Length: 405
Image 1 (cartoon, rainbow, N blue to C red):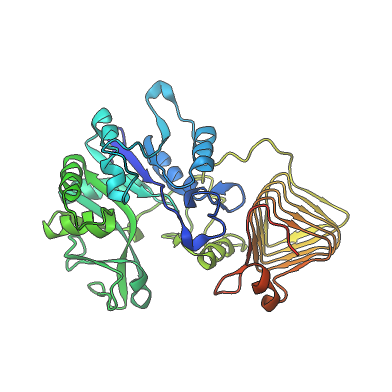
Image 2: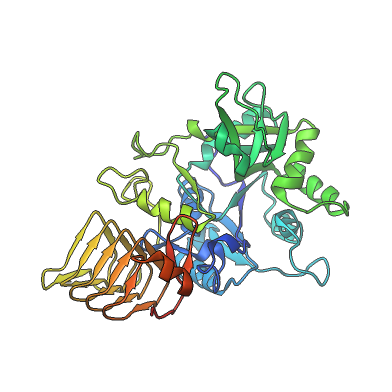
């Protein structure tokens, strides 16, 4: 198995995340908190680092301050062995313009590749929830002889139209790459399933460089990895698919094997949190053999006083539940829930304050939100729609620092 020493990791973290508003109003999508003490980007970085890929460049652009700070304070690897995770802002190396797409972001940052001179490059997205051992995908890529290998995950064919769909006849070579097709092709031997792209790619370095340079000259291109680069390599017969279902991670359970969640909308972000909190979770944050790495900060342990309770919930450090009830919820650090309050089926990010007698149901409260005593959130959706963002699935969202009415 490849050890990762000849691989450069490039994480694409410039996404604006418009469909996650208002959570992305003040931060890049990969910096959005998730699962209590994590950020979305921690999931891809954990997989790369555990998999031995420890030279990692994170390409940023949109409202990147909190993301840059998180990377610089949390992701410190051993400089003695040449390991690093470093944020790379848009540098305008090819002229006075920002990144025009994910492919252009890498093209403008090819100096990173030239400096490291890796044999292979792992280009991974920054904002999905999953575990993956990238070494297994690297081995499959090398064995295939392809110029690029795309990680594919099987989804019901009826749901595949929301993604880039991979068509393969033999299960290895990609015959076509279709962007959100109305009639997605089924898999050989499994016609009710389709392969969709996870947004993770492994390139042979020179193939990637040549493809990026060729794409940069195409005035009709969107300069996007999935929309332009991959289809171009498919047309040349140089693209292979890696079945994510075959990836095995130490410590995984049968229940969470092959888990992958695209959290591109408020409803999918909320649903992914519900996957964490059952007794036997659909996605297990407590896998000690392949942990999702994070730095929870210097805070005291969570405290429950005056009969405060939490059931079927994740409660992070620094939280105080005082004579209140928390059920089916995820609480990030430093959340305070005061006497008589009820928090049910909700996601509360750092520093949220829920006052006495308040009720919060099926809601996402961003950092430092204040719910005054007696206020109700998620109880009357008609009223909530007049004052707050309410998702199509009925999840009420309050933005960073907002005070409920």
